[in-house]
Length: 265
Image (cartoon, rainbow, N blue to C red; front, side, top):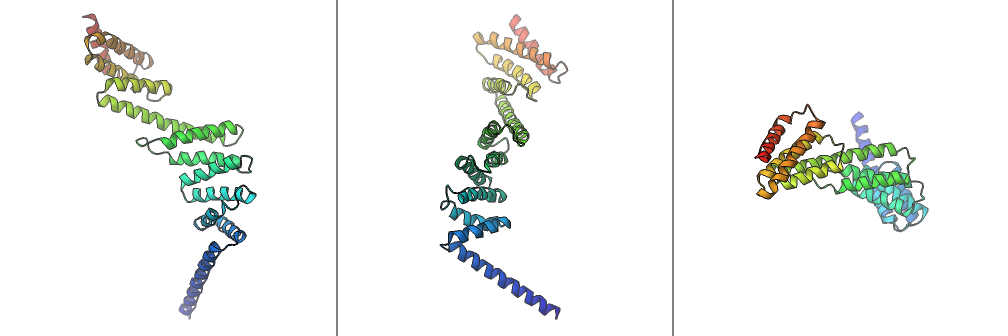
């Protein structure tokens, strides 16, 4: 008896699903835009974002520039965000605040566009286009909504992104050094200090600059050696002054001593 009741419930459930799918498909193909709008919103509110977005993709152009169009753009962005398609979500959040700058959700959409780009920021070894875009949009958000409760979070996100760019810059500089392209390494390390004066890598950067100048001087033509040995000494003095207990002083000090000897001869 129990098995029969369970079987009947299963059949009823399958029939309900089948009917629901047919009804959904029929509505999607319908010429009744109001019905499609109501169905899409209902699916959205129930959290069925995959189905809801199919209705919204059809209807956005129909209601463009209207109150419903505003909601559809915002709902579309939220659907793609929930589906973790952050690239398309960012596109619709940005479209929302560009098309409806006075809309109810303009502030939220401006932040979310930037946040989607933040979520797409890749590891440091990859191209950082999304990182730069997120930084730009987060700064735009702060400038537009300086009193927003999201400003503190935006600043924190920007710090995370800058730290990633800082690490990438440091890794590139070290790569030049390891490749023995000392001129490129010096330029890259010095640019890092200019861009990130409070970098956590400063001690290592000053060490590598010292060593790079010394190696660069060693490989230079005679007329350039003096200038580059002097730069070696100057860089070592910077390291010694800022980090008198640095673990790099022994190696860098040997380069400094050698540079002084070369200049005195």
